[in-house]
Image (tube, rainbow, N blue to C red; front, side, top):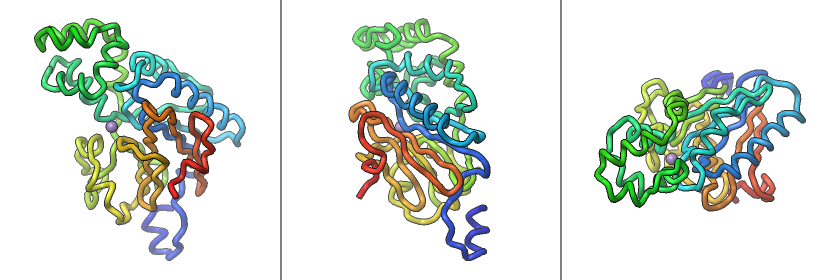
Amino acid sequence: MSFWKRIIGGGGGSPRGKAGARAYAVGDIHGRLDLLDEVLARIEDDAAHRRARKTWAIFLGDLIDRGPDSAGVIERLRTWRPEHIRPVFLAGNHEEVFLTILGGDPKFLANWLKFGGAECAASYGVDPDLLRRVDEDEAVAMLRARVPRRHREFLEGFADTFAFGDYLFVHAGIRPGIAIEEQDRTDLRWIRDPFLRDTQDHGCVVVHGHTISKAVDERTNRIGIDTGAYKSGILTALAVEGERRWFLATGTTPARELHRG
Ligand SMILES: [Mn+2]
């Protein structure tokens, strides 16, 4: 049932996922192939132990940078073909920057190297110190030569949003007060405060990554699941089916303790 139907009906019901389906959403991976392997195994195991449903796994973006193995993460997800689970990939701000550089534009290069790009470059066998020393165009050419075309094409195919019943999955968030179809792509990938501080109902529950919280940041109008995997070791996945939702995470932290408060 849509948000408006519920309001008009005066029901005050909980948000629901798409009828007859299940979704798993995975937060910012940032080059942690070790944690990705673990969370994929947990998702596949969880799905195998529940009723067969049409099932999606939505990756909220920022697969790359910061952690040690961006190239490995991309290759793992590019070739991930679980039975009965359809992967959906959303682009984060880190994919945007990486693709801009790989497209031949060096304007973000220096900042990218500072914000986790050095580790990404190293995962492709490109020495980040060398990238800093040579001129920008040469640095871009070195990266373009080492990042496989199939990786670039994979990243270029990422979506901006994924709607699932009363839920909307995005990388960073939405600009409050603007219809989903009219959202600016930059907001979807980069927004923080105007979205994070907003308490109004958006007409959907927004599930997002991008901004790190110590525990799952579960509010009435949004759920943040970026638990800072690259430094915390905790990569979180949210599962939604009907009115139910539950969390899977790497490490030994019980899902319950991932909740704030
Ligand atoms: Mn991000």
